[in-house]
Image (cartoon, rainbow, N blue to C red; front, side, top):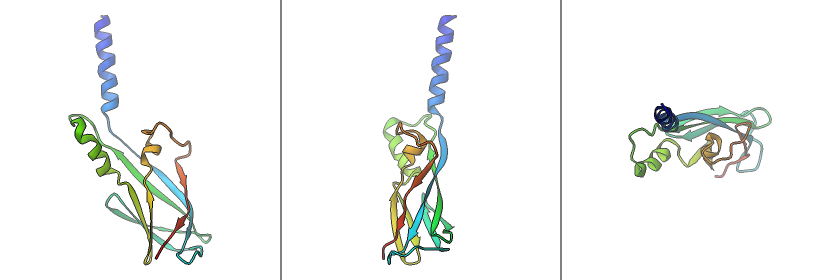
Length: 133
């Protein structure tokens, strides 16, 4: 009976760690043009993970961008292929554009997914955008 309980506990723990996960975090801040003026009521475009999404800043140039992350299902995937899958589903950089101006941010999905061991309580990354020509 003890062996059965131990076997059951081990198999449950493996299945829990083998499951994939998905979630999101937010990037909030103020957007500034290349001329260092606040971009109020402006359309900004975010390109990340093969998708383009439009967001509007408010009258004070504030924005809130949603960044999705995915941890693929591990079952049957050899260890040497695992890192490549995480990179495929979670690009390292986030590209943000305003008209002909652009900027990039690093994707901090590992922090907000809990993989890094430190997860902020509110799921929000505060950073201002400074566009460049």
